[in-house]
Amino acid sequence: MEVRLGSLVRDAREAQGTTIIIDVFRAFTTAAIAFEHGAKEITLVAEPEEALELHRRGIGDFLMGEVAGTRPEGFNFGNSPYEISQVDLAGKTLVQSTRAGTVGVAAAVNASEIYLGSFVVAQATVAAIKANGADLVSIIAMGDQGVDRSDEDEHCGIYLRNIMEDREPDFDAVKTLIMAGGATRKFFDPGQPQFHPEDVALALEIDRYDFAMKISREDGLLVARKHGG
Image 1 (cartoon, rainbow, N blue to C red):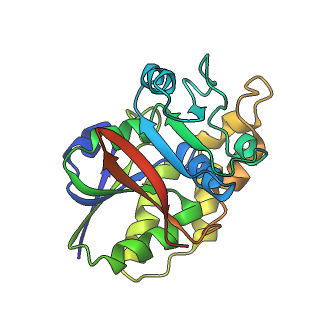
Image 2: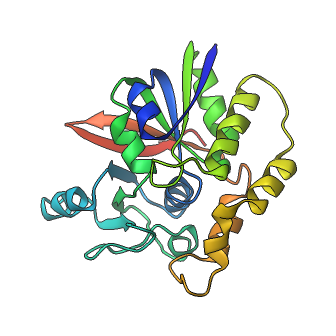
Image 3: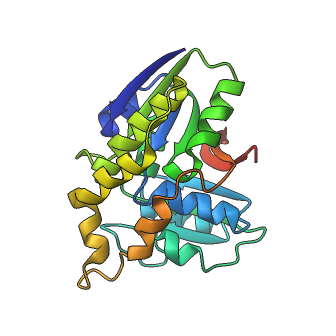
């Protein structure tokens, strides 16, 4: 198996083979929690206007996402793992739009398969990909707004590569590096209430869930569902 590491939208566009799009803070931690709380499927789009249009067409019971960390007008939920953990989503469908993760999924047009990546589903994602016998895996860290690298996504990419190649990385060491970086500061800033300290704690719970999240291309839409677990 060949494993390639990449970053940001530019590498998402070039990604080939089975591809993991990573967004730890916060999209694909939030998505995992939504699935755990009963969501049936999540349609991913790059722009909030697309999400609103799909909703007008009857797609998605709820809209979930963010622009600059804030819930867009007309959306039901923001992009907070903590906030979505308080919601019963049993049997519901969602449309999600964020500025990094969902943009990366939409950009990965050359990927044969796409999985959503975060620490909470790390081992389950690797197990699903290995079970399918992938020859080429592209791991893309989406970073901040898809244009600037971020510690948490880059470290998650390296962590996933390590376990994909049967190494045993020290997650506590990885977590320490992330907590020492600048990306976590906004979550503890009272002036930015759209970010919750609990978001960080939830996003850094390694292997919290035993399922992967896999994209299906359906009638031009990118639809994520639980895979395994």
